[in-house]
Image (cartoon, rainbow, N blue to C red; front, side, top):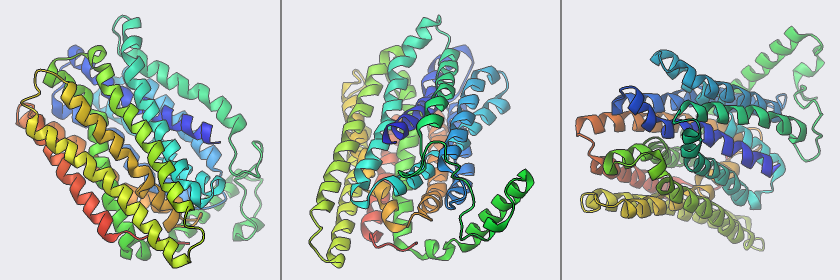
Length: 444
């Protein structure tokens, strides 16, 4: 199951990062200001934000199969990816296609959270989350590594990568449908989206399609009513997770959306020339995420002989340390790049090295807020908690991408301001998490 989830993460990143790679050759074909580039990139996040809470609500109830929800998401974002280059002449439709991709990909993390809660014991959550995060990094690496060659193989036609990556997603639906399971005791052919026995809807007929739809709607409404909204709002730990997540998204979205453009504008490199500069940070991120998850879980497993209070206290300390490293480390790297960007104008090696270390440390999120979600909520609300903290974080990340484009246009591509601002946002997120987070379960 972890292999399938890893591949889902890779495919979702592949389809997302394809646009970042394509923006460079697209700009040579049609006139695109940095503000327009920011809009194109940010509409993925707009769709993601619109879909994340509904996805969390749906996945907070047992009557819906996460396996089937993920399949629907994969199908829709693959179709949106294929449609993207076909709509290039109409900016409104192009933005709508990117929004569809983002909205469809919004099911990935909530679905992963629910599946991990069923498949993985608590003391191994960090590694499990890290593996999924590594899947995202792998998709990013593949997008940067193979996209230039794919474009060149089709005589420089950037549209080809959208057709190929979208087609790969549709093909992946076959093994996903045949092999994925909702829980270790389930079989791939189980109808796991039936209403649970203790639900009032279990007494309603399920053979009628209309009744099924009504039942699903009523169940979703009950989850909405039963969800601990006030507890979410009043929880210091939930605020810590949101602020850390928001800071991470600000930097992550800017990195995914703007790094190819940074190398093109700052060093005059095309997609092929900048490919390997883009890959190194993701490789370091892959290693960083997996190692941080393994170390965090090893530290957690050493606590088994201690009291419950000691375990909770030490778990909180571990989450704070790793999340602090995940945000303060990149802040130092980006602040250094911001201050010294003029001195490394002649060579991209210094910038690449600093960005690689930043991405590598940022992947420590897997042992920070990424795993914290599993500790704060039981299986019922784990997907919803992620959605609640994710939605405002997505908005922050989306605004980051949009305003980065405006800053670049207003300052004649002054990347020093961009990296300096990113560093400040990281510091704010790290400070909030370290001061506010605790690992005690609040939402069951």
